[in-house]
Amino acid sequence: MLQNLAPGVNDSRQVVSYRSDGLSIRALLTVPKGTPPPGGWPGSMFNHGYIPPGEYRTTER
Image 1: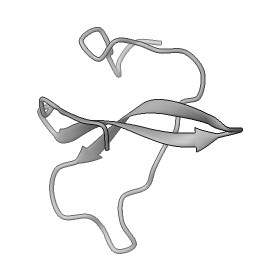
Image 2: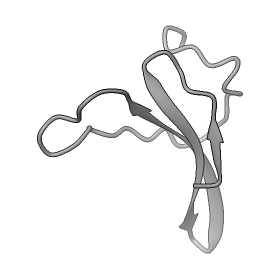
Image 3: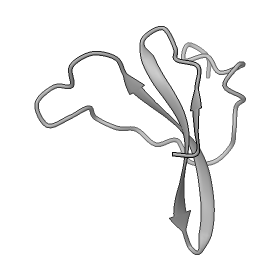
Image 4: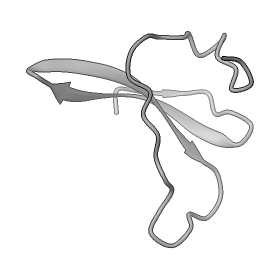
């Protein structure tokens, strides 16, 4: 984890990084609030592009 961000209404948010082909890739990680289901929360990764967190809307494209 690189940085904790202000929580959303239903989640916590962190800036994280991972290695890919020798590069350090930064990403926004959101984790739902509440008790995880058996086996943990499912995950989705969106590769390519960037939307500033203040402008990101799940209801748009």
